[in-house]
Image: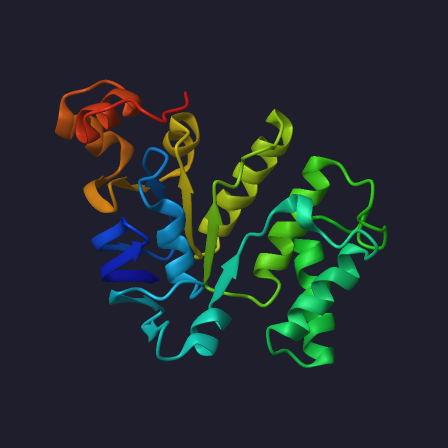
Length: 244
């Protein structure tokens, strides 16, 4: 479970986050939805400990990120850029490296690597170098890296950016599988179709604040609109930065 408690963060002259509060539950996919500049990425970077809030705090499974950063990060998986893989390594080598980096001993790292390769059905590419991988293969390897140390929570920042249609579909299936296994999945997006298809709960953000919280259906009912896109526009008062 991820909890954000009254976080504020100013970057230069911009108030990126303004007393932001919400929670993301285990066994659910929660989406941060907002136009460009709403503070989605700043929020996720603060949760992961890459940025220090000016006020407020984030908790991962009850662990304060600022006070116990190592313990918090052990319960958190961050989906990296699939195009930033170490191309000279095989997925098995890549995953083992990050498992050890997260604090596992070599034996546990080998076991965890084998487990996640099987879980994501990657045995056929496990011992091939990542150079020359397709988008889908890169995406699977990146997601495997995020979950190899068995975190309860997974964070993704606009995960389908740059992916083709088939790779996007594979990613959706993987995220739904993680949800079914009881993980807390939190991702940011401004793509309506993506959010409507995946999210159990949506945090609508605008100017660093929460504009609304609810399921896609609840947000439509709340605004009297028939689609999430129209509900979103009504909630934030603009259609800037929205993708269909």
